[in-house]
Length: 255
Image (cartoon, rainbow, N blue to C red; front, top):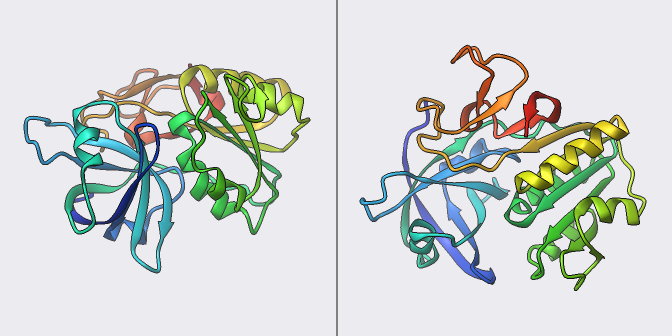
């Protein structure tokens, strides 16, 4: 079982409206993998639950992780105020990451705050597979430079201000993007559409589910998703996102 750790903030910057990027020095960098997450605890002890944040980048040489998150409440607002040298309590890395298929032509799909995990995934795939990245935004872009450095980037925006006007599936069809395996992370409606597209094309599809988690270690059963098979832990058709995921094979999960 993972133990809590006092990590050190290396640096932090705002990279978009209410979107922050933070590098932290942590032992978690030694074993972290693309698709995993860390839980960040608040200094304000009235906020009992940690905030699960996906890992964006891993720098094993420096012993550092990068997280990119959106401010949506009091906990993440507290995080946004951290500065270099501050200490934050975390636990991680947690969950199961992506299963890499280096021999296959990959399509990485990220939507909104589901885009950050695609940076490390593309980094791990870029020397072994042909990496195509489709990133979907409402309007304002972030992390595009990092994605372009690691693969061929295609954009989709709801307002048409960059790339294809519409969804990530619209961009895939408009740009005639083909591949053998899909890796995805983003809001549920996007994942539902990606799953349907993958099934239609006969492609393997892995996706990372974003969900508010409580314990982060699979004990409380607060973060569950419906699955086609019974979970050995609960003996019902549920899986624990924090422990069994957050990455699942698309055909395993009902959205």
